[in-house]
Image 1 (cartoon, helix red, strand yellow):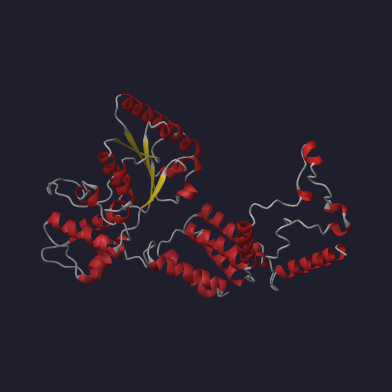
Image 2: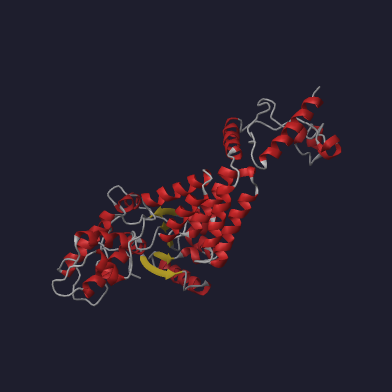
Length: 435
């Protein structure tokens, strides 16, 4: 699988794709990942320390994950053993592990590179744990999915995550300049078309070189393409924004704020722009769930249900049918009554928990599963609320040294209006029973 590209020096007559001919021969030649392989990069520091360990490479396609893994094997004198989780199963894993054990017995280590590692199920991921722990393999897994969601905690606790960034304009331009050097001729594009080509690559270095090859094949003698002709040739338009850069964050911020501001039309507009730009719909679905709990909360408890249902509907239907479920959720959230009372209350409770984290709850509400604990006073005096008038005892549940605190303040909108009435009623009963 071809991946990222740097300085070359290979025979330019070799009948191989441009991306393969531009593959870096040293980590220092990798472009766009200075935070990892630069002079003070995270991988560079690990190599200096002499101990790399197992790693997870997380980032968009065409950012150099495979290439860096291959070069890392060379730097650490390990045998590079690649596999893809798409095409491999348990039998392939067992074979790879046995081969690695044989090498280890002969004094040779193995770097097992697993592309698309998130495609493995939990049982398959668990199979890596013992061979990672005993040093049979150094695992380098590559994924385009957020490891926090796509990989299990046991594997993540044994591997360090390295984040690869989508290539910025400068990095793509550097690749194109190297391609021109190895081809011995400039790209037949005017300045505006060249910038459009960079945007078309959408942070994917491999894609930028594939597009460059298409352009060279299509160009006649002395022909120079403008942006319109470029789009005709490659049948691709520049994305509206780079999903890893400012446009991505600007538009998701706009979507969030228009929903919070109860403007369904503006919210639909920004949703449509992000989908049209190729944004991951499940990223949008996750953000809608967040908006439901942060900005609507208990003013409309159904908001969270609707947002989760939209995510499930998209999972079930896919694109484009599932996009309508996201649009429906956006309209619902934008038109729902708004409250951040639960959000504010949780932040306040979190601060209090940090300050009073070692305080014991009152003895009345502690269980007494043993006779000793019962004799020590655990659970003494506890009033079972269902046995009390109005199913409410009015007990004090707070640590004695902390005293009663007040975090949640429901608003006078939507369902929270009803919650406020209940809280006021219970507070009235509590005051009566303290007399």
